[in-house]
Length: 230
Image 1: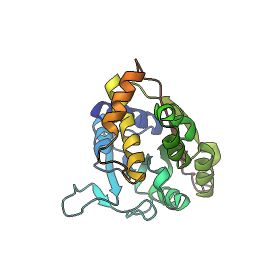
Image 2: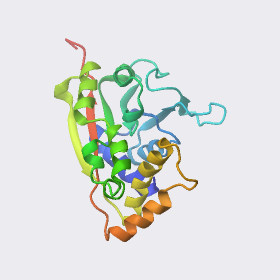
Image 3: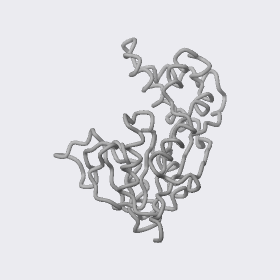
Image 4: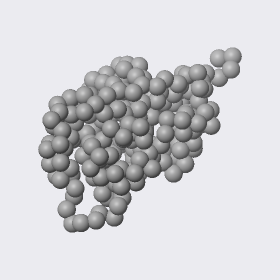
């Protein structure tokens, strides 16, 4: 995803989770740490990334190898925990959210950013490759499913906040933001053909669509309840 898109989402996550200077946050499945770095730069908060692909021998001190279901951090270590487009890959999502609730402080926020089937319906992929779209949408979690995961993880329903935000930016940024979804679908299909479909995707979009269409991603913000009588 391009740098402007990363900054766009960094700002949205800062606003949605009320993250402020000096607070701490954890990006679960944060990959190369680009989003973490953008949030740190824009907010003054102190971030960490946990990802199973991190190489401890070469990684920066704030990038740690680990999984969402067994976070290698002590209790109440963060003010905010972020799940960005990893919900569909969680093997035990309720366990992962319980782990997030463990490492976040009471009153802390847990955000889950994802593409629901309704969000994905707006992709050009739904028009030019209906079969591929159906395969992709079938793996996408619904809003109600994630709300159920949160409830089972002990996150109070009254603390939930639902924010659907349209994708904004230039045409090139929009294509960059969508290409990773096409790439993922291609990889999961077994890589049929020898060339990545991203270039073909961009060509189709440029021919078929004069301007970028709004694209919604869903952001659910949970709060860890305070202990009784706290």
